[in-house]
Image (tube, rainbow, N blue to C red):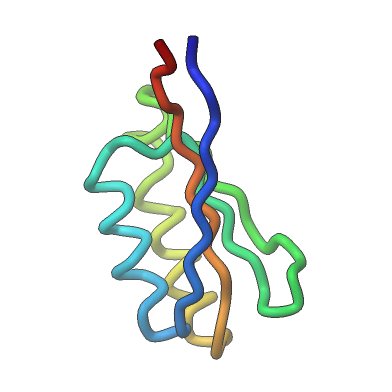
Length: 84
């Protein structure tokens, strides 16, 4: 049985793109949510196996544009854990 686990990270706009790339490269996240410092969700990025190849490049371009506008944001990384 799989259980969803969420981790929150607070990053600056300068760190946003490199942090997202690192999470995608790790390969164990199922979704990334980028929230404004006020708590409102700006974008949700699904990272299912089939979707990663198709959406990564355009999403990273959009994340790069957002990084230029944001000073601080929260990144929520959703992972699936195997529960025994």
